[in-house]
Image 1 (tube, rainbow, N blue to C red):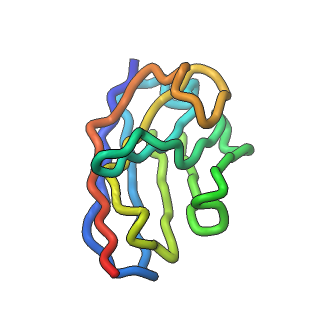
Image 2: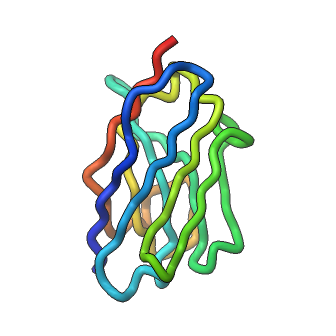
Length: 123
């Protein structure tokens, strides 16, 4: 299994941008579907983005579509989440996840979770 370490979180004003990175250890990174989830205080964990093994397919919920972009670099064992036009409601701990199946939204097939990185968006 891979181990995942997120970075890039921080504080930003509404309308700003951040790019999260998730570095994976191990040689099997390209065999995983990679996803991002987030969890705001007092709320359930929410799916944010998914990218398939090769990077040819991505999926987003309506809440972030057009503002967030997920990408991956299999040579660097890293997945990214570019977040633009950030809103206060985007404030949450963002988690990187490695999945074994292409099943966006659900976390049923998540095999490995990162430790999370906090994103705070102020108005």
